[in-house]
Image (tube, rainbow, N blue to C red; front, side, top):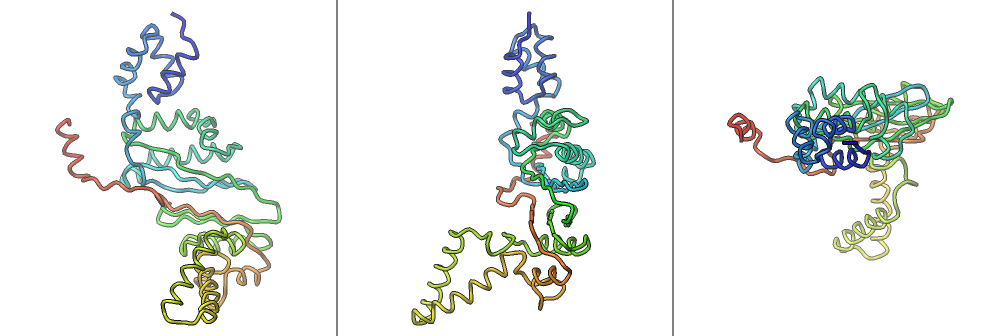
Amino acid sequence: MEITASMVKELRETSGAGMMDCKKALAECNGNMEEAMNYLREKGIAKSLKKESRIAAEGLASIFIDGNKAVILEVNSETDFVSKNEEFINMINVIGEGLLKSDAKTLDEAKEVETKEGKIGDYIVSMVAKIGEKLSLRRFEIVTKNDDEVFGDYLHMGGKIASLVVLKGADSNVAREVAMQAAAMKPMYLNIESVPSDVLEKERKVQKELAMNEGKPAEIAEKMVEGRIKKFYKEICLVEQPFIKDNDVAIKDYVAKNGGVVNAMYRYEVGEGMEKRNDNFAEEVMNQVKGN
């Protein structure tokens, strides 16, 4: 029986397995979709399917740089134990090196990027079957710079936090200091101009209500709000933050004294904004031992 591209596509979408594995399964089963699915399950290739609904909020973030191009990415696993696995770390390296050579802009485009282990999407599926946990490329950003700019990168806690900055005019040592600042102090935005208007207005409203509740007259409350907004900027904007090595100097001034300016910042913290697993790991292991 002829194995058509549409048949391979259907099995791939159902099983989560790679294209070549699906084609082989269909050929072995004479085009029978149900038997091909069972074939993949028996081979362990379709293990990823039943893991899709599981939570993967652990993992690692990493950064790869080559000349004027860099990529920052986050790859998730279900447990912190797996994130320390050598195979998992190698998988991140393969994905990162592949993305660094690509122009992918979306996760769908990233899945089609070729690596030494095949397409990223297919490679992740094969690693799910091998490692036995749900794994996923959650996000990435490909960043380019000009010749007069420099990258600064920093990984904290072995990759639980990754920060990447782009500076113009300063050297790599200054850039690394700024990247360490971004990792440690958790800025949400690069500068005041990048703070969304709705975020600013919400903070103004909160601070005005607080001042009014303190019994301050409206005109005094307004002045208090402006002072508190300046403090708010120092908390959420990288370049407005006090330099962790000299609290008397803001990051923008520290960089300026070294002949530069911060042009961009990217900060990934593994699992931020995601639901965390709260199941009993010991119980899960026992269930697996009992064959449940």
